[in-house]
Amino acid sequence: MIGKVISGGSFGGTVGYVMKEQSRVLEARGVEPPGVREMVEDFEDQARLNPRLQQNVGHISLSFSPEDAPKLTDERMTQIAREYMQKMGITDTQYLLVRHLDQPHPHCHLVYNRVGDHGQTISDRNIKLRNAKVCRELTERFGLHLAPGKEAVWRERLREPD
Image (cartoon, rainbow, N blue to C red; front, top):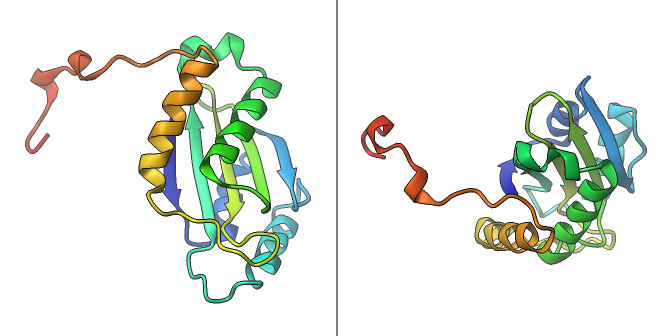
């Protein structure tokens, strides 16, 4: 499992992107799918609880190996995403979890409000380091495919400065 932290500028653009034609909402809290405009309004209403926070959109893509596809039912993916959020400290806030069906590898997008239910800030401090640690931990815990290390890199295909 790989988690990619994506910086988003607006709830409108982020929710619009994740709600593609080939997608399925797995879970939502504090927003009412499937209407994109209504979900964006819900996110923005809560964001007003903490007007000092400029970057209030959280967006993380969780991607899995194609080898894990038979194991990854919607329920299992939702369970993994919930544990991911708990370990990352993404709690007591609105979120939208959407599975995309447009790629051969299973993946889902988590969009969350960095302004919590009571106006508190959901921290993004060291988020990429925490993300890597949590992804590795969950990959092992759920028996998912562990990608090979750097020994599998095709050095002849690398270009400077890689």
